[in-house]
Image (cartoon, rainbow, N blue to C red; front, side, top):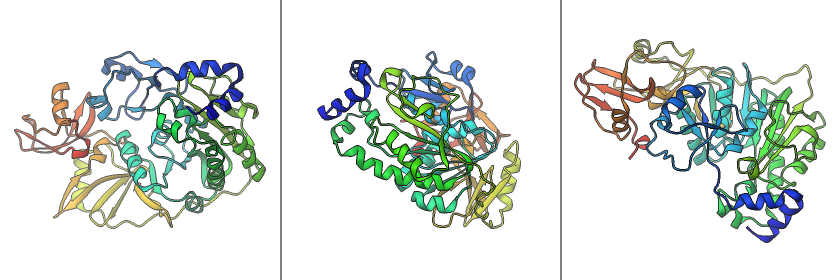
Length: 437
């Protein structure tokens, strides 16, 4: 780490500085978050080969042992947990987005906080996940699909266009802004090398613009959480103070549901600072609330779907325990969702709901995302043991006698993907990019 950075940290931390230095010589913390859309602590503990040890940052957050390999983890492939740096889960814990509400994650990739928001919503409400970088937005989509999220709209747009689309529509907004990453220096030493004394001020300018877009999306009476994985006051307290000066109807909102760390902030009880000595890496979060008024924004119009083919409807009827309330078809692709399909104006849609499948010469072929969705259970399943599941995830064809046709391949009653049986063998339909080698 550069001396200029260490000098700043010594001023910032005072008597805690040596504890910080000591922690920086230790290994980074690994964490997981139980996917409450699919499982719970008791079930996951019965599946995993190590004891779950709670973190203080999220109700479903636990430490992940260094020697546990994700490459061969069937539970991970099934989307039963999400791997996340422990303290990064604090921002959504502070937002606490529960109920039938509309939530926006404005800087969403790679999806750690969006999937956590979805867990809080428990299949209710509506989640919009935006990521301006198109390549990172595809990573967001993959993680949301593995988690089984089916009540979300994923877009890739400039935050200003997102603000135009959802002006004063959102009950809650998370703005986890791009930052200098000072809290990730132990985990990502390259970031420490790239850091300069000018980096925090440069980041703060961009963060202010993104926060202004977050403000526009927030409906009166709504809650905004601003977070970073950095330590600089320019990007944290000073950025928040400048934002509140620009928007006097925004006030700090006391954090009542998060007691994991000492306050360490100059902005009353609305902010939290987390350092490596707290059991994670580094994070800052601030909760704010918009003054109430009688006016709300208007949601975008719903899109008109092409007629849903009978073959797709027949597949859903024969395979799903309960139907999706909303279906949408464009060209040969059928999508399914727990929420309406909204138009997006200037915002590029990565995905609305899930990609349920495609029509090919009059036949409906289900998509992997349909198998991973948490919305429903399947009527036709093929349950595998550990050895069979590992072979399936490697892309192998399995000799299993079962009814002909499509079925969801399951492990501990959790779907891993689809297969198509000829009666004696099941043909593997797991996409190549998801196979374990």
